[in-house]
Length: 206
View 1 (tube, rainbow, N blue to C red):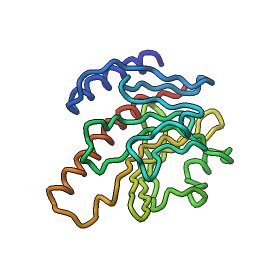
View 2: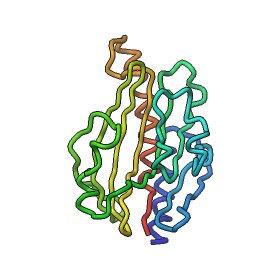
View 3: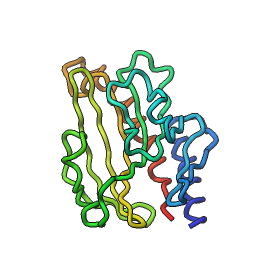
View 4: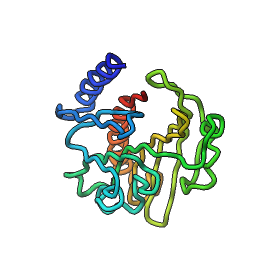
């Protein structure tokens, strides 16, 4: 397990460089119960406990990227220097799915109609670091905001966990706008998503 985690850290560092981000020191987060851990760049903001509710999640995000009622931990992608961007917030979180005590129910997204994720794709199997996940994408819309999410469910130690990457924008990426502007916003959102996927790929369950 230690060797696997060390390998994941090396891959994360090299991948951040490939994304054009300056090499940053990495921090390690371990859940208080020891169930999981992951690494993240030190210039990303880590939120736990009441800070998930009270801290600013990005720049005036119309749809928060982390749910304070279910998130065990949240990492906020830095968006400073992108004042003219429609990218409002991006984050990675690990949530505890309440009321699900069996693996089939967890991986079948049994609670998806009870939570406001909006439109969802059909879930598909996904394996990472030896752990089976069930993946689905989701889109949530309000009048002036849109959120795109990647959802990964797994059942570990009799608990259902949802690993979530969320990107919040002012407006919809598919809305009417010049193609060059739409492409730029899509590129910014993709960079944030790919960076957060690196954190996702570092998650190790005990």
